[in-house]
Image 1 (cartoon, rainbow over the protein chains, first blue to last red):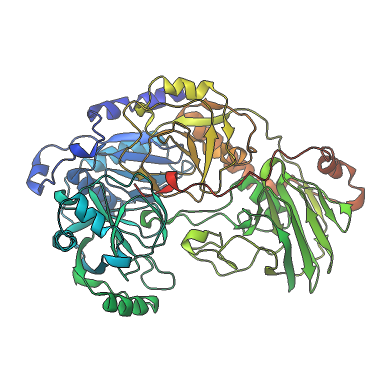
Image 2: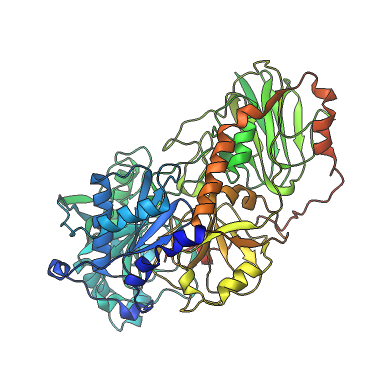
Length: 278
Length: 349
């Protein structure tokens, strides 16, 4: 009865159906925890093949949804479910990988819906990192164009970017590529029409409503503001991965000479980023 | 110890094993063999654990040499002309390459990837529990990159164990089965078009993703969604309406709607479809997909039960028949296959 198995979950899908608002213009402003006192809506449970379930809290980049994603992720560390092998938090959904030989789709779905409706506890220990960035010039080749497009000066763009208080909403695409929420609305720009095939390691960039810390050199369609010496992913270093989804991040502007020194230190295995609180 | 020397090898060939799941939350993709059944088959033939590290050989030819001793090995997956010092050798069979002998492999026929397992497995330093090559992340051992001519692998000397052959159930040429979703509600009539059409795999495909060529699949609400997690077999539809099936070196997140997902039991069979050959998808329910996965797991578990000793390798006519029957066939793969894909569909969202 394969069809029935899927249909039995239709009410989860319908319960939280939202108008498709996939444009960046419709992003909700961040909500405070007070807003969470309202009854929690049901997430949509979407099959991602036979060995993973997407628990979707929103279709949009939405701070409340991201808080719930991270909360469910923490819950699954505490309330282990036999058969769940790995979880991947993203802006709006938690991808739960599982072994169908140990737990079936329906049983796991039911459990996840229950856990997703627990009140969202504030993260007990939030780590706050300060990440040094050299802005502009050869290290941030799009800074001047971004300033022009936004009718202001490069210094003003840097000031606005540094003033931001960001959270690691998700890590994805390539190792350590950290997507941060909290970008000042005045810095939001559409991505480049033509993505670049190669952008440098450590690139700090903006794209849409997000800013990002890129670890490895690779393709990107975002606007490059600067570079950091911090390696969010480095083999043979403890920890290999520096940032966790949910971590708080601020940036600090440094000059090119400092960047070069920090880059050598980071290459030798130093973390370079400053842990401000946890 | 012996040395297994890569004397010649084409692109898209690398050391692979069962992969490194567990760090996708940090953006680290699992990698691992494109065809896990073929990897396991080659390994089991030489007495290795099913997902031990072996050589995944892309569509082009290769030459290997044994140095400092004999090397026992087995070939499985996409068949090819294969010979040792001029005498034809069979797939799905173990064999011993004597010191100084050369194993020559032709282009892949009727598939894309062959697996060469070595008795005792490829040795190296595991990273996140795996030797699988993920060149972008600098991972893989003994070389964190695809194999090149001149590379040498330290391997066990041949044990002298009896050579063996394995009988596998016929793979069949049935449609590739998918579970619809997770974003099938981003498509309307296009779902039927997706399921009713013939597709071909584009020449610009790689271990990250297979691009499909066929009718344009139109989205209901545009092609940008907010990034979410991906799995092996996710079928995402970018702006041009030509789907991309994500493979083991995929990005861990993606910002295109995913119309369906290839079921686990069919992933290896899908990975072996040569560029340019037509195939179809078929939607199945979750219960069927998971029942097929259980059957697949059982097949993997019982592979050793399918082994038979071969008394005289050269007289194993039945085995040689498979290797030679299509000897004159022209490979579906040509020089345009396995180019490096353009970066456009593989950028962070």
